[in-house]
Image 1 (tube, helix red, strand yellow):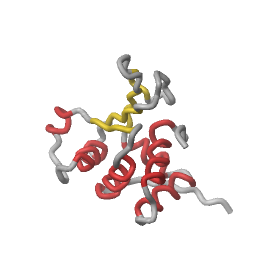
Image 2 (cartoon, helix red, strand yellow):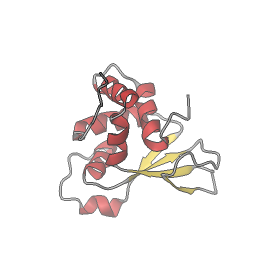
Image 3 (cartoon, one colour):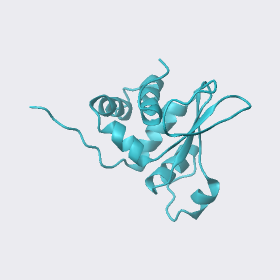
Image 4 (tube, helix red, strand yellow):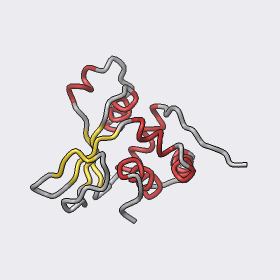
Length: 139
C-alpha cells in the first residue's frame, strides 16, 4: 500500500520557523515583500521579518526570494527577473508552493525535521530550495 501525503495548511509559527531557519545568516538566499500590500493586510501576527513574510503568504500573497549565487541563471519558472548589477535572480513564491513541496515524501520529511527542532539551517535550506527551484540546486 502506498500512502499519499497532502499538506493543506501551514500555521503562522510553522512558516516563521521554516523561514527564519532557512534565511538565518544565509549567504545565497534573501527574501522580500511588497510593503504596500503588507500594510493593507487586516491580520498581522507579529513584527519580525519572518512574521511579515508568513503573514503575506497566509493572506495569499507572494513573497520574493533572491538567489545571490545565481550568476545570471534562472533555475525555475518562478523567476521574475535577473539583476544586471550582481546577476542575482528573483523568484516569486506563494503558500501553494510551500504546500506542494510539503506534500511530497521528501518535502514532508524535511518540514517535520525542521518543525521538530531536530532540523537545522541545512534542512530548512533544502526545503526552501525545493519551494523556490523545485529541487535542490545548492548542495
